[in-house]
Length: 73
Image (cartoon, rainbow, N blue to C red; front, side, top):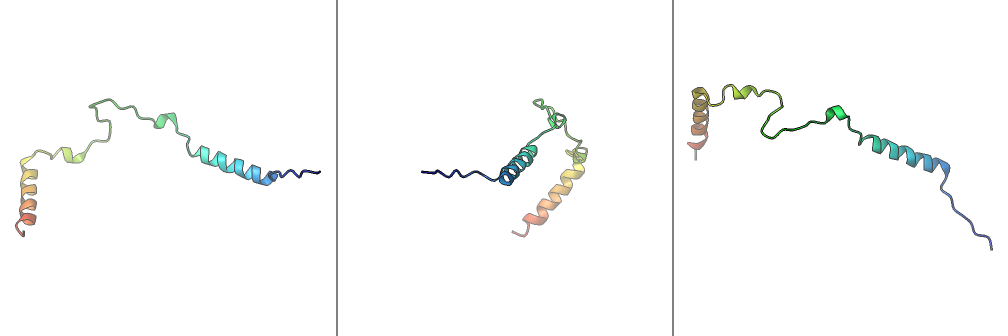
């Protein structure tokens, strides 16, 4: 009795290996991209709106916008 053994063709093996390498390469992360966070410390870019936050001019503008929207209800 002769048993036939079925082998995966070489091109399929190499194709599968190439796909696996490409997929794993997408998971690579540079060590310089890692950010270390400290609690309570903001390390991002400065927010330009923080300069006008809390000013009387901003409160007046927001109050006018609120009145414009809420008076039609």
